[in-house]
Amino acid sequence: MADSEYTPDVNSDAQGLTRATTADEQPPDTERDAVLCLDDVTKAYGTETAVTDVSIDIRDGELLTLLGPSGCGKTTTLRLMAGLERPTEGRIELADEPVADETTFVEPEERGVGIVFQDFALFPHLSTRENIAFGLTDADQEETDERVDELLDLVGLSGMGERRPDQLSGGQQQRVALARSLAPEPDILLLDEPFSNLDVRLRVEMREEVRRILKEAGVTAVSVTHDQEEALSISDRVAVMNDGQVEQVGDPEAVFEHPKSRFVASFLGQAGFLSARVSQESIDTTIGSFQPDLLKGLADEYVGAMVDVLVRPDDLRLTPAPAENEADGRIVQRQYTGPSFVYHVELANGDVVRCLHNHAENFDVGQAVHVDLVADHSLAWYPTE
Image (cartoon, rainbow, N blue to C red; front, side, top):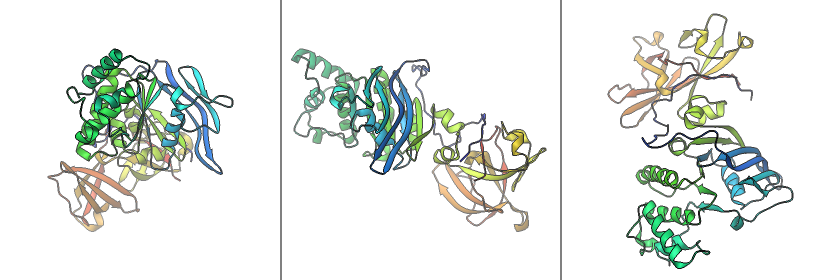
């Protein structure tokens, strides 16, 4: 699929899917050295290729999230970083030293990499202190006790050191798993779907807490998730994967607001696409005609062509149509989110778009409506497939 070359100046939609930073948190430094580098890494299992030509650098002190649907290759990529898999092709460097290439393969335990698994993998017969201290094999008892105390304080579990895992809540168990992985001071920390086993309320709470802990510890980390809200809310950068390849890497706002492919646009947020015909004078859609500068970077070669215009729920506004023959479309579904409704509207040409309204503005399924474009920014677009 060919992607358009545009740099739309757009704002995130009202879904609130961008990362909140604290007042004392410094913005990520784009000039930092890379701690971990993947260069054209491919992993095949027989005739099946899970990861193809993945190249990505993880910068010192950042939290990067591999985001994508199930089966896209993100977990395989994490396992390649950890040394749990060996690449079929390509090169991996950690701290400027090769750990995997045609002639080199460093085993996981020799890489200085920490891993937090989905199920936390705590030892049930050991106390919290003993779990955290498990990897501190080179330290004497005094050094071990000091390090464990430091980590208990960091993860907010001071006073719980003698409890066993079955005496802790899910969130507390996750903190222990995190502290255990941080104890040996790894070069990089890898988190495999770290919040998937928590309930929704605790998941939101813990992702904010984990980000705080990682930033306070100054740790470089890579997380894996299929949850876009999680990825956008905790990450310094997001790498969106699809079909074994990285489609786009950037900070959460850039990836959400400037999606480089139709897949990225569709996967992040609630996307709708307006079919549009491009002319010299206008962009013509079923809900009206607009100035060509609505689509920033639109090249002359697209004059006369059909394109798909990305519209998010807060880009559109509904009003009741006075008569059937004056409607732009009909509501076919609505989602109640508490503060708002998201209405799915089927337009006259068959396009389906989503519109966000306050919960007090109530439309009925089946109702005929006008649809107005209210976006005050340029919009992303893609050649019609």
